[in-house]
Image 1 (cartoon, rainbow, N blue to C red):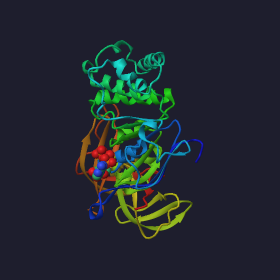
Image 2: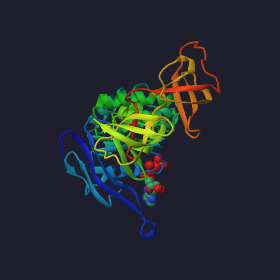
Image 3: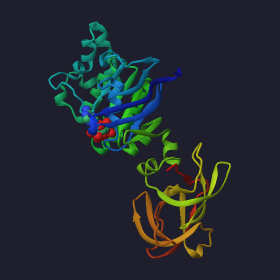
Image 4: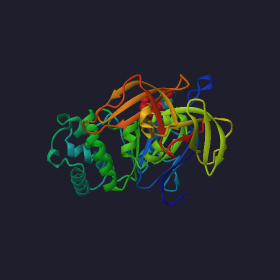
Length: 366
Ligand code: ATP
């Protein structure tokens, strides 16, 4: 195992149920999570994120495969002996105990000396900026504050890895945004590997060093947020992360990792191939809505394709345009950033031209 990896998940399968009711909640998953990394498992409800987290924590055992922690196979190690801690969606605090006692609870249970517990609790209170509320009962503090206490309690024993299962989902939008920044700061300050579970694409993109996108128990793509967004290799990943356009076509020629794809709706498109992809016949090309721009016929600008503007949706920061392409079937979406007091140039019903940004289109594996 590479020195830099905190957790290695090797070909892990977790089957629930028996006989005809058996199904794989985790299906041959392999991931290497680096030390000091903010790593996110992202996917829709029921895709197996929590099961994978529970396997790492030791609350479940893999049907097959290995989980290696800092070079050691931890299959036989009970959860409480693993240098891993978990923050759950329900913070699971003791309501009758103070903030400080909640934070120190795990250390006390581990039989650490009283002075050490006091020092660690003080350090954790400072880390999560809760010094002033140390003596309050946790039933008398807000949801966001409870979240901080749960984090402090999980960080107090200095685990090598912290597992976070949708820890922000109970918070309102504004507080969630604040806590996202806070979590990122805590991870950077402590240097602990964070493995974070969410179904929220934006949360994953803004917080993570790397993301694993999961669907139906499978790991579809592991990469940086930017690569997952800009260069999805899989149709599910492209669709799940942000809005996108899919265009079907046939590969004409390939040179230097770029394919010329012939499409009925937009002519020939230059699109980057995924690594190690052997193109064969029909493919899907993906293009994000902000990677194309719109022209009116009298702009006399070069156009990849043309169509009829069917819908204009104003979103404050940007405007979305839906165009029915020349094949009469495909709807193409574009997104343009709004400038202050910009005059609306387009109207529904306009015949428009569309130009794709260079190097932005990508061929998907499926
Ligand atoms: P969510 O975001 O809704 O929590 P998830 O991606 O975390 O979803 P899991 O909780 O890992 O998904 O569940 C994956 C699948 O395994 C689901 O179909 C779930 O019903 C099933 N499952 C989870 N735990 C068990 C169990 N102990 N016994 C049987 N099935 C289970």
